[in-house]
Length: 96
Image (spheres, rainbow, N blue to C red):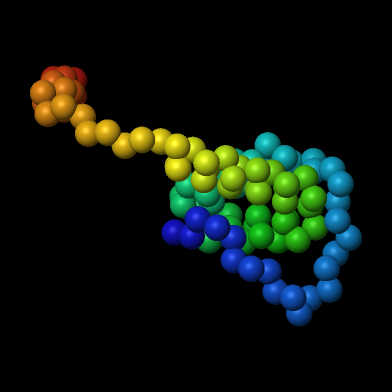
């Protein structure tokens, strides 16, 4: 699944930019799905169409993308001790 938006086509005239978004919470959810690589093609297309004309959503997309990139770079991956892994597996199996 794609994690970033494809470049927009320059062959179309650009619509006037909106300065307010009436569905920003929904857009944020879609942006997060896209950046996490979990969005459907329909969600990706819908957000891409929205980003052509919605300044708040464009800014939110870039901010979320930058935050995700910074967090990814800052997170230190450490191995978990084998004993801890086994205890967790055992507890999971006892709940099944």
